[in-house]
Length: 470
Ligand code: NAD
Image 1 (cartoon, rainbow, N blue to C red):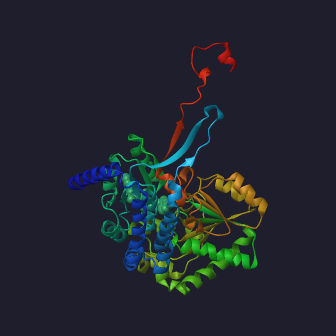
Image 2 (cartoon, rainbow, N blue to C red):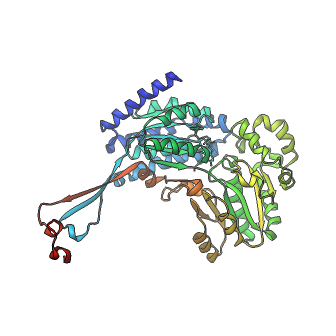
Image 3 (cartoon, helix red, strand yellow):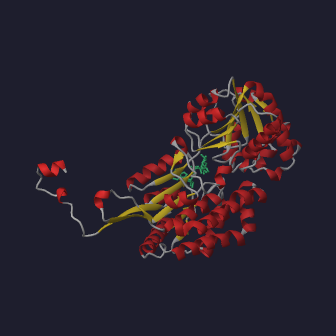
């Protein structure tokens, strides 16, 4: 550890010196680094697929969609817009100050620290990095130790493509994270759990370092009365969002579904059909669903089913599921898509973030009850609503608070650079993606330029009645 701390100190001094030298401020440096990220992912696709497969059993199709594709899109978007983002914006001034000129100039913050999470270990490391580079900062990225193949890939490959004097990858677990947090940073960008989020915030307070916390929580789906092809599309989008993105190990993944009681049987039936279409009978297509990241998380997810009330509420899981939890699947760290109907609301599965392929369906008398249900719990990172009812949409927007609200689809907000991505309340604070990433890693400096012409005497003493009236 002593050696790590010494290296850390040396690295930080180098990053600070290079920031002060101004080398990262110019447009050319920023664009060169963004292009280098594009080159890095393009030239190492196979290695990225391999690392993601080793850590999470991620299929290359899923890996491309959620990791390589996301990074490419973000880097290209930044390259396209960065010049405009960097330009000073004209500011409004009161007439009283005439003649004068006002501008808002975005400037880089300095040396920033990015913590990535393991579920999308490439995109959640490189996407914030794109924001930090676009804004002209020097950066340390700390990948998650729970995705070791991706972490060591990043540590090895980043110095080969990016400016090593300004961008460093530091590998390690919570011990290294703690050492990093003892240092002074100009910004800490953290993706992870609310538990560690609190640790980050209290460490940042020591240096008054601003933080962005991209946390998690329980993201609900509200399903209004739909039928026919609309319902079929809905079920496919729910299934894709729940099981087709890191097997439910996603911060904006679907945690549970709220549905009118009378609709539940048809929903369960359609979900089962969809699971069979996606993964075959008895999930034969094992390579199409991600594995649980490690033994601890595997046991944590299985334990959510231990409660007798929860076990009794399982309405879909094949025989393999039970055998699997015991023998085969434990070895593979695979949990198959599982549907539960009305598990007890005070059980862990309904109070903790599931972060796995279990899908509780909670039945309500009326879709409007869903608002009260959501408001009785911490603010979700996302609320997904499948409805055609305009009045209900409006009511939901007015009466709930969440990082985002998506009507009639799931998970797609992650690829929308024009929208802020981030939580509220327990799901975190701060925004990123596109221009929001640039802003997150910038300070907006107010610049006011006056001329020596026109002096307004009433602003100066001595005070008298005339100045009061003025
Ligand atoms: P985590 O909080 O356990 O770990 C995240 C990072 O914190 C890792 O780099 C880890 O090394 C570090 N860390 C762990 N213990 C620490 C300590 N004691 N002191 C300092 N640093 C420490 O989170 P995770 O398990 O990697 O990810 C799962 C969580 O992340 C879920 O809650 C999920 O919802 C959330 N998440 C959020 C987003 C988002 O964009 N909002 C994306 C992915 C995951």
